[in-house]
Image (cartoon, rainbow, N blue to C red; front, side, top):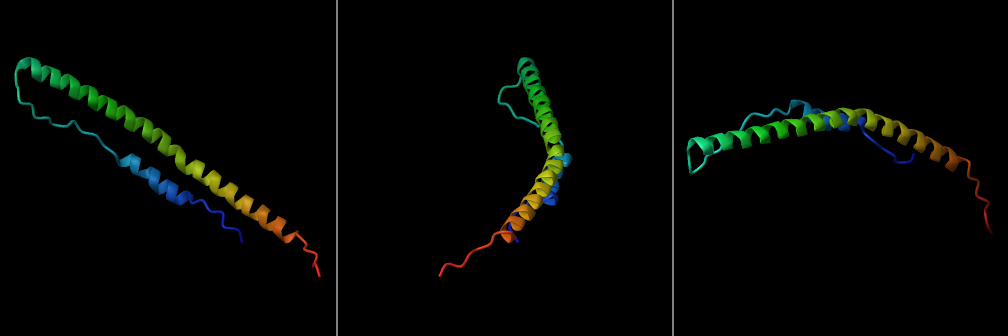
Length: 97
């Protein structure tokens, strides 16, 4: 048999890791501490946190599509392998002597 293989269960396992990702605000230590520095630090931290959440959300959206795509590829691989095997069985070699 031909060796065409795709593994939808491995793709599902890989994509499921994105579901459990959680983000929490990080703590940062600064050398100078005054009201302006703290306010700026909070703004920067909030922006980073929001962007990280957006990236995670987009990654999750893509990851959710991976198992269905992998299943489709797996099915196509099986069909291709069957077609190739059928073609190989239909080849007749004439002996040359």
